[in-house]
Image 1: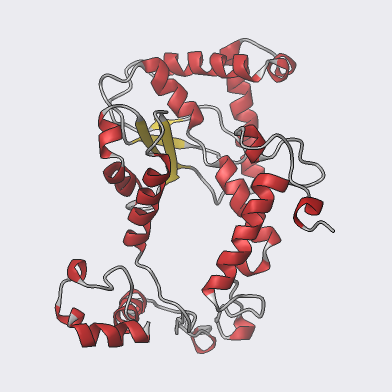
Image 2 (image 1 turned 60 degrees about the horizontal axis):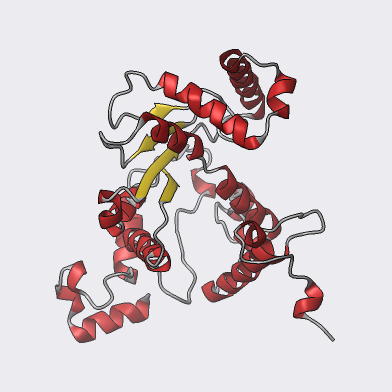
Length: 305
């Protein structure tokens, strides 16, 4: 980041608005320090713990930090380039990260106008304790049994396609009088996403109630969250940083990687293993489900004699 600042001084970027800079997508060291000073200026610490806490925040010494808004738009544009040759419909389901839905709506504006792309954000009580999750799940299952008029055993025995059709029919009933553009509270709690609320950013008058109900059912981050959890659990450098009083509030860990390109390589290897190889318990890999592979890729296929 220091080198970026030097380059900016040489080519005159420092006096330009960020949108006209050569390195406008990256933070400079001085700007990032000011940003940190601003967000920590009003932090008030308990007098008892203040001597043991260090608010000095530091990035890896190698590489540069891409600005968050640029990262979001770049991600949306990359996906647009990847799927632009397809005539299929696409449904982008995201968390409530500020700006992410705007980036996708901007990148896919023509497809949104023709109804080929829908965008929704999902919010749920992710910090709820397990006991409350269990209680809400039982409540949701009870409400589902009441609405469908079936026992728990009968619901479990339903084929997935039939079960989804039944759910959609019930959601259609609940959508009566639903206001255009208003978030929809999913009525059947799950353990992974208790109190889920879906905000369809591409809601429009011509959208049929049946399709709206289907979009509400499909709006879930469960699979994505599960994959992220696997990465954080199985790849130590990708785990969340932990701060303790014994290390003076710092989040340094000997297993973290301070060369960003190394983490990229490790995650890329893990992604290939997850999508194409799986584990001994994997019956169908994601690549097989998408029709990209007829079977699993084994270690012997990569590291043959």
